[in-house]
Length: 222
Ligand code: ADE
Image 1 (cartoon, rainbow, N blue to C red):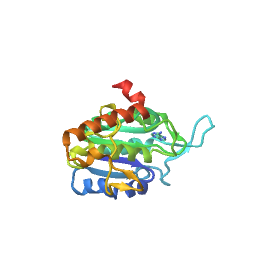
Image 2 (cartoon, protein in one colour):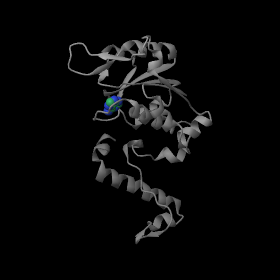
Image 3 (tube, helix red, strand yellow):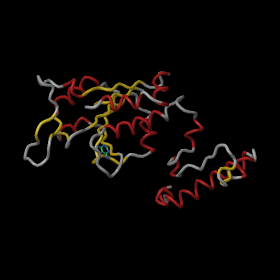
Image 4 (cartoon, rainbow, N blue to C red):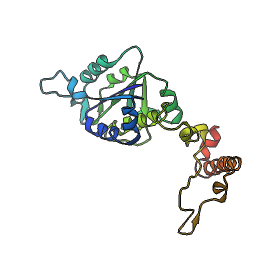
């Protein structure tokens, strides 16, 4: 898979991509991620990317030209263009799973007070990561990228995401490591038993119990 991210703050994105699991996935050629500065596509002599909004009221608005030119330069017939916006479709795990099937994603991060409405016509999908407003789409693009990359073949062990929270609309079961007793808090007996069937049953029960307590809305969905 290839992911192109269009942003005014490439360093912010690159810093995250240079660490941990995503970094390893890139090094192992399981995904190619390129970060592009929208400003580099500006045809303005001062590399301007924003201007005052018509009608007054809001502050600076991202202009269409640099983003249209960037998408024109990167898009192929296999590309899917995602626009990060609080007005988009609420993002969830099933969307992450579906996006792993794409060959090429182009992710556009909005910034400032907003972007020219015509930029929406470039998007195959508009995505929101939650009902709150961020200063830009950078964090949203990283949320989307991270959630997709960890699901790609070979990035983490298949078993590690088989029971992820939200897979089958259930939250994940609790996990423990050493020591067995920490400040009086014990690891559940069953996990020390080595009895795989019982462990599996316990985990499933914990998933149901947790989901019922914390996210009953998820159970209604399943
Ligand atoms: N840009 C600003 N806020 C956002 C949100 N909640 N989701 C996606 N992109 C955004």
